[in-house]
Amino acid sequence: MGQRKVCHHNPNLPKGRPIIFVLGGPGSGKGTQCDRIVRDFGYLHLSAGDLLRDEVKYGTEIGQECEQLMKDGKLVPVEVTLKLIKKAMKENRNSTTGFLIDGFPRAVDQAEVFEKKVGRPKLVVFLDCPREEMEKRLLKRGETSGRSDDNMDTILKRFDTFLLESMPVVKYYDNLQPGLVIKVSSVPPPDDVYKEIYCAILGFRGEMDTDPMCAALHHSDSCDRLSFA
Ligand SMILES: Nc1ncnc2c1ncn2[C@@H]1O[C@H](COP(=O)(O)OP(=O)(O)OP(=O)(O)O)[C@@H](O)[C@H]1O
Ligand SMILES: O=c1ccn([C@@H]2O[C@H](COP(=O)(O)O)[C@@H](O)[C@H]2O)c(=O)[nH]1
Image (cartoon, rainbow, N blue to C red; front, side, top):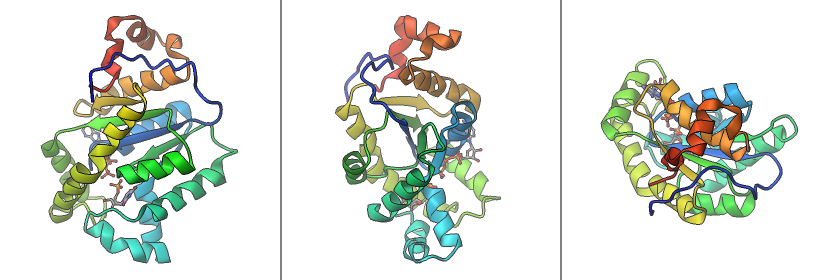
């Protein structure tokens, strides 16, 4: 993953509704940032984890198949997640201006199959957060979330799965298309983390100059801060 100086200004954007992936470790803040993106851009937020938890909650066949895997911090088969995501995209294709996919793809083979069967995202946001910080956040969230995986035992397994299987997805997209991935530290407060994401989205929409803060970033050398290094 080399140093690349890339501004998010892609003149060859295909038409249609954009897809954004928000990736990062467990508790890195994906859902928190997605809330802000939805607020400002109105994209449809599809959390693969939420879709799976709904299946578990309603006791569907998929839910029964996935419940234990999720408690063990393992990945459910891509056929399952892809089916849920594609269904939600299809149902909403006429009512949304874009798709914000949170926590998927979780492995390189998942990214490959998405690329083949659905398409390429316009932007991949990678939230970078130290493990200790993620652990602290998840344990705190676990006090009230009711999630069966917000406990120390499962958190450790989720970290292992993330490092082994999910981190390579970031490199996959960075290699696939320079500038596609932005790496953002999610340690600062949520609104500060969001600034870079917001500018990157304006960038691929060709609207960078509509916001003075983003325009300054775009026209200065600091533009390469947005690229994955
Ligand atoms: N920048 C931040 N600073 C401090 N706390 C944060 C920040 N972003 C999110 N949090 C908190 O950390 C916890 C995890 O955040 P969030 O649910 O958004 O993470 P996630 O990446 O979606 O997690 P998961 O993958 O487990 O679903 C939440 O309680 C949230 O309020
Ligand atoms: O694409 C995905 C997304 C999620 N999972 C499983 O769900 C849990 C929880 O996911 P969150 O994104 O943290 O809500 C995850 O640990 C996996 O078991 C998945 O397999 N594939």
